[in-house]
Length: 141
Image 1 (cartoon, rainbow, N blue to C red):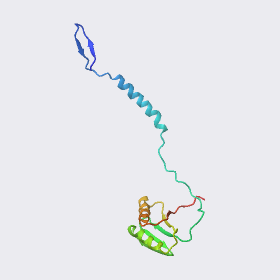
Image 2 (image 1 turned 90 degrees about the vertical axis):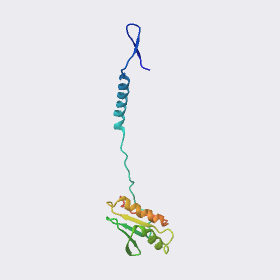
Image 3 (image 1 turned 30 degrees about the vertical axis):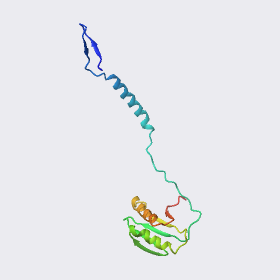
Image 4 (image 1 turned 180 degrees about the horizontal axis):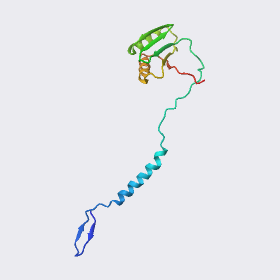
């Protein structure tokens, strides 16, 4: 309800103005809060752990090599062949039939390769039921 201002003659009339002082006070408080908290916010960053030498290096493994152009090569038992992303899981699974149960499939990719290409390769291997999928990294030593 609008405030009523007394006027001479006993009649009351509504004030048609909005009082801006409370609005400005709230805005100044919010401005100060944001100015104080903004420098405290740190943008999130991914802290990738460094790796050392593995305790047990497998003697038999298959390598999936993702090229800079997105091509995929499957290398096992000294044979290397280019495969499509869709057939990668089938090729790996058929090779693993003749191998010990804990034989890993190692994915190697250049650091300039698209992250999506590596994930597609990993996803297709897991969908095919490959039990051990690993990523190749450089050691920090």
